[in-house]
Image 1 (cartoon, rainbow, N blue to C red):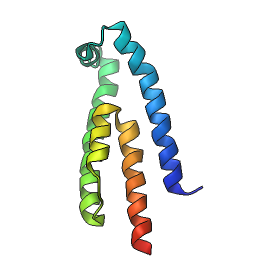
Image 2 (image 1 turned 45 degrees about the vertical axis):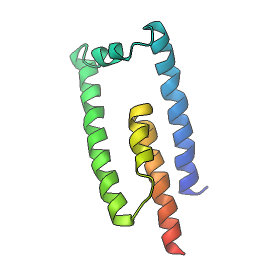
Image 3 (image 1 turned 180 degrees about the vertical axis):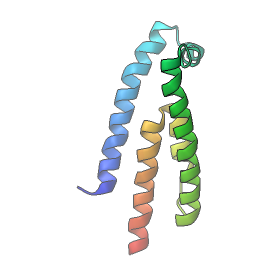
Length: 108
């Protein structure tokens, strides 16, 4: 199996697992996304994971921008949209998939 295929499989897994939690949460809270943001820091334990994910998102975003410029990647907007629509669990493998496509293309 090629690495790009593994990244695509991880993208699908990310969407399924993330939305399997998000959709019932939104249904239970009248589709109020603000409740999610309020609960992100409801205590220090949850705040730890929330802060870690926010910092990871920032670091990954910097990495994506640098790699996009270095390798002349296209479609950087896709992983950026993925951060907000699903999260880093989709954005990172999606970016790595796009990166693999460009690396394969440049080997030819």
